[in-house]
Image (cartoon, rainbow, N blue to C red; front, side):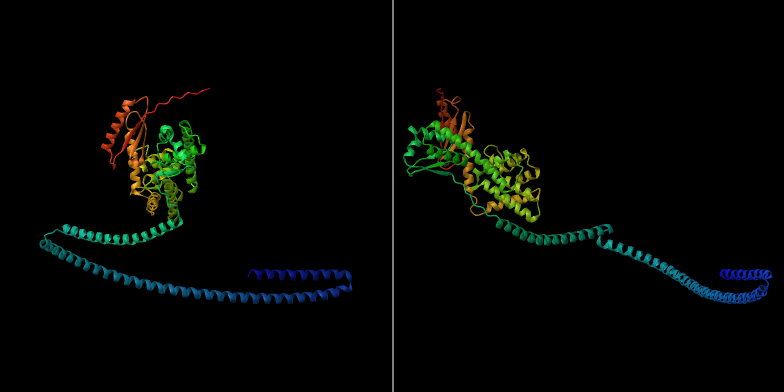
Length: 511
């Protein structure tokens, strides 16, 4: 409608403009003579045309208005029909809801009636149950609480039995699987590791260039051989075997020092007590260096770093220690490798297992000096030199049944595997070494004794006394007292010879 009004306004303005033009032409024609008539004629035509155009425009506007009105009325009619339809649907739904509400009310009344019936039935059941319980109590002689407790106990017993049975089956199943896995891991570790079996010997032989050297080794009235035996604590056997001298001692460090000193003396050729002492000192120094190298090599073989140097030296001493005929250092390296391999298969701490295996027998380096089990001695020694608590636990627990970590258990398992190899150990040798140590300790326990050496496979003990504390008469008494002490405290085959040696030295220097 707004557009129609605008259109009519424009049309009116055009008509007014046309009239104005006609008037202007008439006025002008008054001044132009002949042209005035023409102008009037043209104005009349223009006005006529304008009026015709006006009528056309008005007719078109009226038609548009009529169409718009028709369209609007149709739209209003459609909307009224839609509203009527929605109103009918709403009324239908309202009727349905009313019917549903009526049905629900009926159902509610029905349920209420049934609930009252059920309540009455429950009351009747409770009465029957009470009478039956009374009868059952009279028959069984048990109250309800006692009967309930009895049922619960029986159910508990049955459940415990079922659980125990299930636990037993599961334990059996997983134990079989664990055994299979353990066999695979141990087999794999053993297959990956191949080491030599090193068994202990209690004697060493030294080759001589000729038999004349035997006499020079013995010296005048045996002074050279006595000096060498006194300084090293070994027994040197010179017999009819050509060009061979046997060094006998249960302590491998002493035996090695004596062997090395003998070889140096034979090479040098100057054999006399002062030279013997010098060569023994040199041999002792070289053995100390060998101990250091052995300890460092063991840590290198297992890729272990950060150990205290003093602990490495104790580790190197195990190169000359044997347990049940097995070299302790070789055994420790093997245990470290085995424990590390098994730890890698199980996802445990490989480095902890390796260090624990390497140091598990470190206490055997001090068992001849410190009393107590070597596992506890080793744990205390390692803790003293900064080894962490977990590693010390592996060392301390490697002979126990209870373990604080999986690495501790692996070290104990690796120790058992290493010891179980064919030919690795000999029970009698360890007992033999223990007997010789007890023999020496018995002699050292007497006042005035400086050193004691068990030789001849334990058939003789040589006791070095301090000359200022024990005189010649007391030496004889001391030998008799030691022999009686050995007879009383020790168990040994055959007989044991006790020799007490008292030596006085005077040294001067010529300048």
